[in-house]
Length: 133
Length: 128
Length: 124
Image (cartoon, each protein chain N blue to C red):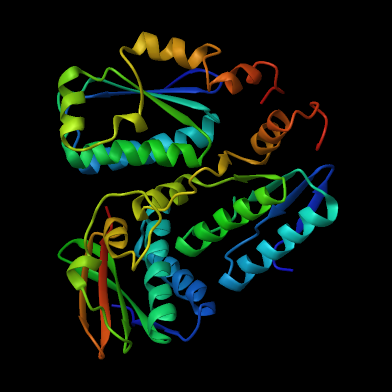
């Protein structure tokens, strides 16, 4: 299994690098063109959350396997303020209004799996997985 | 997918659709818009017996995504039952342009209807 | 200037070449708004064909560009959103609201010509 790729997020400028590294890894796993964009977009939003709310953090990228399935795992973690109302942040209204807030329901739609763990004052970790169709 | 004439794409959908198939159809449709330069897409759901909330939302997303690519969507073959389901799901039917049947949808897309005048201009445009 | 802007008759055409940072997008906004004022442009086209990802910031910024330019009396058209980018945008719930979008530059110019009542050759 290939090594984990870690992109440090220290400012908004690192968002582009994070999503491009993600796209590159996803291409190596063999994802389709559409999925490459979905994954890159999800990474962009999570990296943006880190830059905007926590100031700094990291995006860890791994290729993963589950039996015969191959996929990509993205962990966006920071030691920022944490999410106060996690349930509300995950609420999915299916609205196509402007994506305010953290974009978590949207990112979950882009990826196959998304889990968040967060503690106020300690930090946040978002784990996303997508499997090759 | 069928291309009626330059600028109009018809997508007839038959059978039950699950979320995964809906996503595939959307991707194919959007790629079809790109390749055929369609300005109007007619999605015909005459052959679809029922929709659930996820499929209904996929439909709305398809309408929105097509719009981002410069194409408007007309939904045809919406049965009264499905219309009721959509309303019960809280879907704003005003977001969909619907015509009763496929023939009507084609005429709407093909003729100089309100909002579709741009399509009329295409007949004068440069050959692609 | 990260994004080259061409003046074509009454129009300004900005062609995004690749991935843009937030700062690049804000610079584009400044350049377009200033350009419209300076050249009295009536239409602006932002070509995003080569943009890898349209995330929340890019979407918000394009909307702001369109609204600000409208206040200066010009129309904006966003052109070239690719199928997978359009798909990702709607999955994320992003919208360009009332901002006009067309398939590509050719369609965008045609739309501006129609909306602004220009003759067929104007802006080409």
